[in-house]
Amino acid sequence: MSLRTPSTALLVLGILLAGCSSPRQVSAPPRGGSALDRMERLTLAANRCWFKSGDPAFASYSLAPELSSFSGRPRFLLVPKGRPEAKPLLVVEGRNGSSSVDTYGPVMDTALGGRVGADIRRWNGGATGCSA
Image 1 (tube, rainbow, N blue to C red):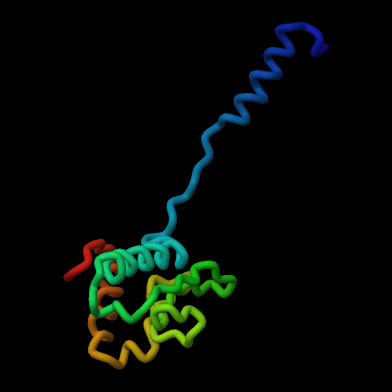
Image 2: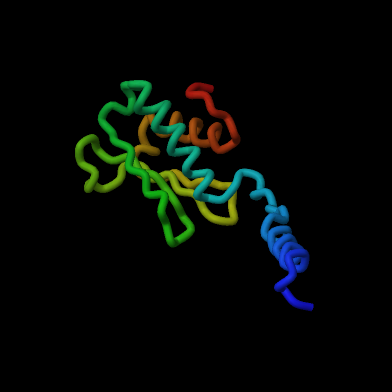
């Protein structure tokens, strides 16, 4: 059989193209997605609800995302406004393989800590709004 005949060449080309265009099964991500997906959603919600809204409770802070993590623990930080190099006052951290999110730092020991914890739990549960 020679590829020099037009019908054979078309047949081979058709087989090759069919193999390239076959649909591939993509498994759905686990409920809640990866830690990175989860922390991206939480960071966007925190930025929108705490900072872009002009909430005075967060006026003295800045958001510092650290989502690129080789440790499998993407996170975002609250730092003093205008001092991104300062020690974090709040760490919100996800873990690969877990739907839990850890929150810790000095802010959690203030009156604002209760609100931060409630917001993070609500957003981690799938809510998108800024208030309970």
